[in-house]
Image 1: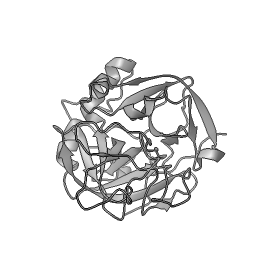
Image 2: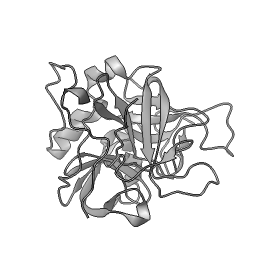
Image 3: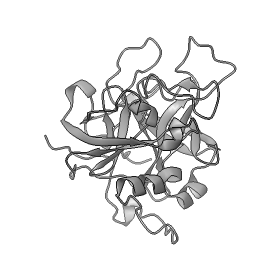
Length: 276
């Protein structure tokens, strides 16, 4: 595969509400089995300090609803290290999906930024028709986050990314199951993004890191091993657009034209300088 589009990472929250699946563990703190992002990689992945997010519009960051439990983030840091950010952008307000408070899943939220970030290439949100065709078992996803590299592992706060398999959707396609015992999300990655490369080289963001999937073969001593559950952005896109007043749809959903590949002149989202 050619050079990767590398969006900035999101962080999993420590105190995560189980949601629709009883026994689901809280999301892990960092990306497990991956590698540290190079300068300029995954620039849309951002960190609030205890959670991650994804810049999907110059004024809007998606994150997990459970990340708002203690008031929500006051700002998001851009760059490869949470404590050495290239830029910190203050948040105007955050809104969590109302169904999450009713324990009906929907672990998704958005934050409106106080100022627009116009110099970071935006990765479009995966549409529902693209998801039906490409977000299938066996597909490869890229997870990005600022969490820990594993239980008792140091290094939280650095942006990491990892390739993992997609296992399928659940909860009426509102959630996506990804990862393996050796590779996936860990504590501190809550709210962070999951990306998918389409045929032709175009990239899409499809998920928000929510929690670890319940498992019968993993004990509590190994919370960062196993599959992770990501909330589907496409399944909640109408709510995000109506509640924020921002259009995130990259093209008319009814038409669903073939995505523009990199070889056809599309912008290369994988690397982008971030202004100081």
